[in-house]
Image (cartoon, rainbow, N blue to C red; front, top):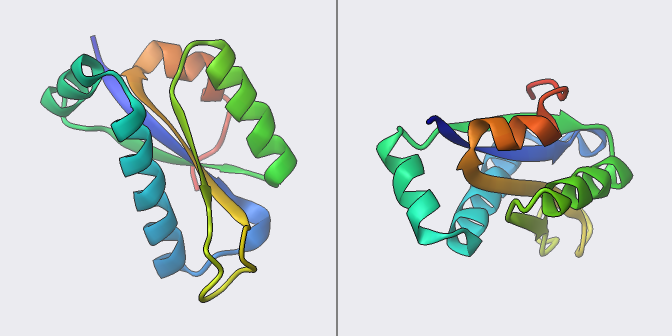
Length: 114
């Protein structure tokens, strides 16, 4: 069975590429650390697939966070320290999973890639 992880990024922040990459990395690591070790092992064996998707704003991100958690998926909400581009406390990304691809797609399958 295929496994994956998704990272949702707020499109309204218009983050520079480097900042977005760093925030997505935080989300990926944080979500993986919160996830069941067996799921993480299977995900790594399966290639560690990560998909970066976009949400329009913070409100939409929280909607997907709730849906993911309601479906038993682990999430990691990333809040920026505010040293560079955005204000301190700005929510930038949400990591979901890793978990079974079909389980994650039930929640995020309609979102577009970043």
